[in-house]
Image (cartoon, rainbow, N blue to C red; front, side, top):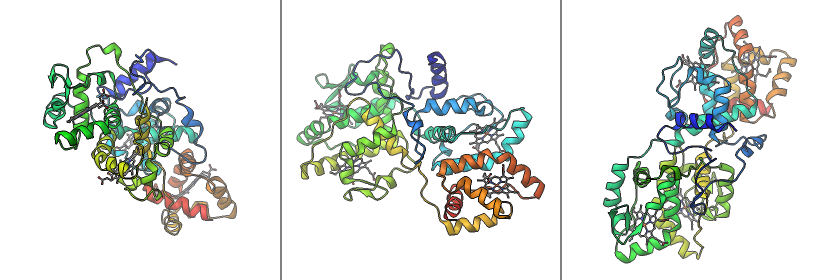
Length: 413
Ligand code: HEC
Ligand code: HEC
Ligand code: HEC
Ligand code: HEC
């Protein structure tokens, strides 16, 4: 692996943002136990996607497709540099695979014009590549903005953390030091530590009459920024990737979350359905959401005599990205609506004209999942565009919902 190149891209990609994906070689390995370096094979995610399309949270893979297919020729993401295409704003990529794919689809003709001008071929994608690329776009909002260390120090004071803690020379002299978190480059570590020490900490708070602090907005990121700013020895930094969603899914069961929580209806019923409550999230919102409910959860664990789960290594990191991944999967569409769209957008005129045409289309998409459907569509855009120009059919722009409905309709044939 060409680590020099990755380092450069990491800096480009994330700038001052904490997540430095997979720059693992040569990192300090101290503190491995509480939050350390993942030992899993990061590409495992891409080989398993065949049936159920799922988020590939490994940003390196997606970024590679983004570069290999020349998207970076015309689009910047975090870089300041102005390019031909619009800067890809992370706030745009909330939604499922097909929601994000529809942005690409709708721009296909305008993009093609620019590509011809730049003498670039319109790229085609394998389903794996398309999934990695769309996953990459889906992951952009996850990173959020970096915290503000000065506000973080003020918060440590105003949220009473300094009643019991010290940080460098600040805070309570004989308090529990928070300096050891400084080497980590992911704010999820703060949540993991607070969660692991939750029972003692909450107990101590109850005894001293301090209420459990809750957070809003970017406050947890600000506190984390305050903790990392204390890091004097930068060579000791421990980089965590963004985590692996599949491992997080396993942890959701193994750590017992599923005993109380369901995900889109499956699982326990005593707590909010997390499939529904984590929509349009990011790392800051997710860590905050979990911490703000930790007091109530602790009570319930006690009442039900459940053992408090502890997190080691990158477990919390994996769990959080799993929660973030929940809305990537497309829900089934409405076949009846899909039929109407198929007529309205004039797909029917070209594809159901003869029996052979119909059979050809159905053979291509009947058994497809959303990713395969997207790749089929995309890889035929040039032929379709040409046919549409000849036959005077306007480019059929579609939303993610409409794409889901059309897919449902075709699958029902
Ligand atoms: C030759 C230049 C060029 C290349 C290469 C290119 N794009 Fe674009 N892209 C554009 C232009 C220009 C637009 C704006 C189109 C318009 O609305 O007029 C655009 C629009 C978009 C948009 C919509 C952005 C928004 O906020 O509206 C997305 C997403 C996008 N491109 C992603 C990609 C991806 C992913 C690739 C690589 C597969 C890619 N582009 C390759 C030029 C390019
Ligand atoms: C009433 C006292 C008290 C308050 C207030 C308090 N803590 Fe703690 N905290 C503790 C104790 C005690 C521990 C160590 C628990 C243990 O040893 O398991 C701890 C542990 C921690 C840890 C784990 C440290 C490590 O090295 O892993 C973090 C992180 C932490 N607290 C953050 C905070 C933050 C942030 C605040 C303010 C929002 C806060 N605490 C408020 C008592 C408190
Ligand atoms: C004993 C039952 C129980 C277990 C086990 C449990 N939770 Fe919860 N959780 C709750 C309850 C109840 C709430 C709502 C608390 C409230 O309203 O303050 C909640 C709230 C949440 C929220 C906020 C949801 C929202 O709507 O904002 C998140 C996120 C969450 N839990 C994640 C987890 C994770 C991750 C685990 C596993 C490590 C877990 N929970 C384990 C009972 C549980
Ligand atoms: C103007 C004619 C035309 C229209 C309208 C049209 N297509 Fe196509 N479509 C084509 C052509 C031509 C191909 C390429 C066939 C080939 O390469 O053999 C194609 C290919 C496809 C493919 C790839 C599978 C295959 O049969 O090759 C899919 C999926 C598809 N179209 C879906 C749609 C959908 C959905 C719509 C409506 C939103 C639509 N098309 C509208 C002409 C059209």
